[in-house]
Amino acid sequence: MRYFKFFYVFILVTLLTGCSDNGDNQVDQGSQEDASQFSELPPISEDSGVGQRVVPIVYSGEDQTKASQAPEGMVFIKGGCFIMGNDYAQEDEKPEHEVCLDDFYLDKHEMSQVRWEKIMGSNPSRFVGENLPVEQVNFLDVQKFIKKSQSGCRLPTEAEWEYAARGGAETRYYWGNMMHEDYTWFEDNSAETTHPVGTKGPNQYGLYDMKGNVWEWVSDWYEPYYKIRSKNNPLGPETGESKVIRGGAFDSSAGALRITNRIWLHPENKVFPKVTTFGQIMNEVYNYIGFRCAQSIAKK
Image 1 (spheres, rainbow, N blue to C red):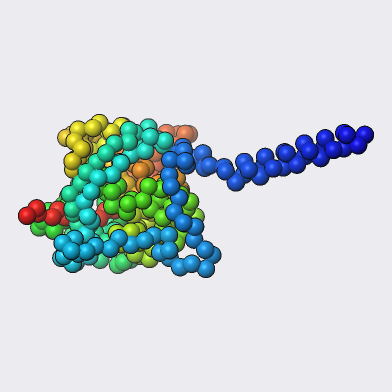
Image 2 (cartoon, rainbow, N blue to C red):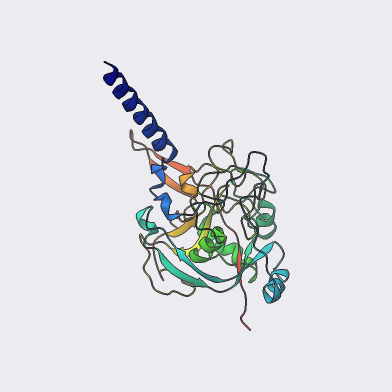
């Protein structure tokens, strides 16, 4: 009898230990990623402020000069090489491939409504407020804004956007592998609305709202997997049916905010059409898409 009691206790302890280990090492299956592919940043303490997970990039020498010459509202992004895409997530994020980019400037904030109205004279946004990001703009609307900006704006390429969003990080988000509400507006903390630009923590380059608040148009045509055409400053396909959108919005899940996640939309659309199951009634599904401007830096 004593032997059976010992055996029972041994089995119980083993099961409890195994359950504990499984819980500690559980990976979010919704992300479809192998967490071992990422290096987690140092943990943040409960009393830490915004920014302790993100170490700002500091420039010196010629790069500091370029940073100081950034157009108003923009930040300097030092070019370099990185691995774009993700072999452990959705199919259209494959294959991982090396990309090398030149230096460029990028808007610190998503395009605000006050800035949009100053150029365009109207406001298409569903949620209205001067410092809220403009949304409900399609790709063609953005092209009109760019034309009126007289060379002061272009859309970033998809490669530029992902490089800037990473801030040099190799984690799921620029602050680490786990969601952290200090850095983004998404479905769990947004109260189902957009928020003034720049009210969450910036990434390593000093860019705000690269994750969440509103989706952002980039210049590339969408294709269901990356075709490697050029390692240096890739522009994506020459033609296509849909344009790429990046970054997630205030109503997005944590998984949609992954750095490598990408979706697409026809350039004339502001919203996705949706057909109901019963009655075949067409409804519009808002997608809250905005953008931010980039500028190239002339080589000497």
